[in-house]
Amino acid sequence: MVASTLTLKETLRLALERPPRWLHEPEAIPQAPDWVALSLEELHPGDILILGFSECTPAALRQAQHKGAALVICLGKAPEVPPEFSLPLAVVEEKIDKRTLQKRLSAVLINARAAIIERGARIHAQLAQLEAEGRGLEGLVQAMAEMTARGVILQDKRGMVLAHHPSTTLAGIWPDILAQFSELRPLPEAFLDRKRVGSQPTIHCQNLDGGLSCLIAPVVVGEVARGYLSLVGVQGEFDSLDYLVAEQGGLVLAIEMARNKAIRETEKRLKGDLLNALLQEVLTPRDARLWLQAMGLNPQQAHVALRFMWDMPAPPSRRRLETIINGEIAQRSLRAIVHPMGSEVICFCPVDGEAPRPAEAIALAEGVLRQAQREYPQAVVRCGIGTPALALGEWRVSFTRAGQALDMARRLNEKSPLYYPDLSVYRLLLQLEHSPELIAFQEEILGNLLATENPQELINTLEAFFAHNGNLSQTAEALYIHRNTLVYRLERIAAITKIDLDKPENRLAVQLALHIYRMTRPLDER
Image: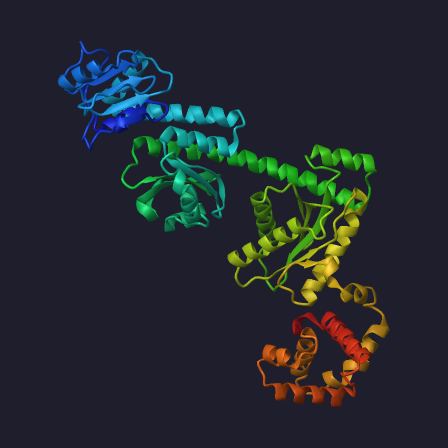
């Protein structure tokens, strides 16, 4: 027989479906024994001894130690251990008989390479069966955690955690560990090129904070890394089983992720068709309700429209914006409809119809804008949010109002999502936008001011003055100027416009004119 180069712990982990429970863990032993005994009578020094729970008495353990066993395995549950017993002792709680375990251990000891290949095939078959049963990413990740007794984390291609499961030993610090995986870290540099790592997939070991390390395996679909699988454990403890699970787990997760992507694409197309039909009002109320129910949506649930778009020259792709939106929706577990339309991405988000503001939709929009800013620091995303649609017939109204809010977000250079009811007076001005009277009113109030050289300083002064309700000290502080400088500017504005700002009706007229100016000036001047 050829002795294995595997350690005792590694040998036992490869033979079992799940790691054993160690009552006495072995020290660092260079290699495992050559033989496995099923009774004290056939035990020789350096052998592994397998005993049933009823056989594993204190007397039997003393005798095993006296005869020089390398390891005692107790099947069933933990036995009573005498104080003087010092051999490695493992409890195997999975349902397996002595003969089967002997065969598996002997196979590992006789031919470690063949045993590793066979164990890898069993791991793949187990995970593939779970995938076929529809256990999903969470079920597969949990199974891998149970196989290895390691924490397991699955991230998508941009670092978002899709599924995770802690090991028993790491459960107390698992939130801290997850925080280290909040973005595409800890990833080796080579893994950041998804095409390269997809064509040459490798498993990489990398240290983490707190004396931990992780095995990272790419999840490859179509020769491109679509995600990353990480096994987390104590530094220096990873063995052959961990590498097998990382390798085979990555293969099965690739199948599951590809299947999920195909399902999502189909659902997106169907939801897009549904949204178009609802906005064009070509469905009867009954057909609309049935279609929503078929898509897993509640026709009685209030929804609100959100409209997003990049607002910059040479922006990232619309598809990228759609991906960011879908990622935020998945993170919040929302049942929302997302559909690209022209240069925009439209989303209908479920909300509480009785709440004064659609908090879920506003939080979603803020999350999208934050994520877009993180990924593209120089890019700008605008968002308009409509009013909640309490019935299917109101979806088109919410969509239209979201469009008006989006338009105003662009005109006002608004960096936060703009909710339609917050447009205030702009809602009225939008209805009069193409009226000659509107521009005539602005020209009458602000014409002389805008005709001066560098009028923007005076316009900014007026806007700050009204923003602070005419409080001179607060306005001067906001503009970083002396109070006397502010008084001088206001006197100059009054002289140019021939308007007395002490009169309330004049202040209202100037404020309206400023709103018109902000709304109608060319985009490149904002």
